[in-house]
Length: 241
Image (cartoon, rainbow, N blue to C red; front, top):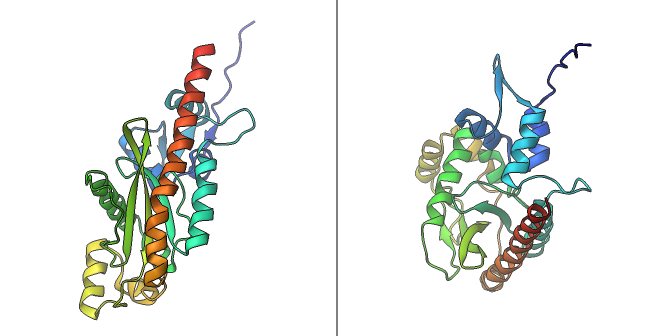
């Protein structure tokens, strides 16, 4: 008796977002570049479920038996840190691609990063941070004008990712009208969006900034421990197969 093939099941971008916990614009970029199994139906991307799950297994991104994503541990830690220090935090790979959602984003970042081109500009800046090997955390201005800092996540001697934190207003804020126009142009964000959200940033005083900078390496070490444990678990799992 001939078996009738079943139609493949397709996932939406939201479905894939819940699986791998990155923002939707990153999913679209991965689909465009061919890094993620996908087909385009009209203007919409659809993702073959079987191919996506095979890709997750091959890349070590699969969920565990309870459906929990390994990255969820890092997300919980960054959420707690961001709330505690009143800053925003994101974990990326060493190339600047987001691994976690942004914890405690300021309204300004949320408004601007809703534009795909602006988020691409942020990721390009995070990528550049991955190539700067200064290991002492310090606040530096971002292309959006607010302050941020970066610490490396390690697995053994390997720099495997970054924790990037900030959204902090510098002493003189908001920027001048001319600078706001430059930010809008550089980020390819409509000027009204920047103007309406520019005041909604995180504000912490000098003493709190010092405590925050001292805590960032501690956060990075915790995330390094999580990443190391995940790699060891994945290695042991593969060894049993």
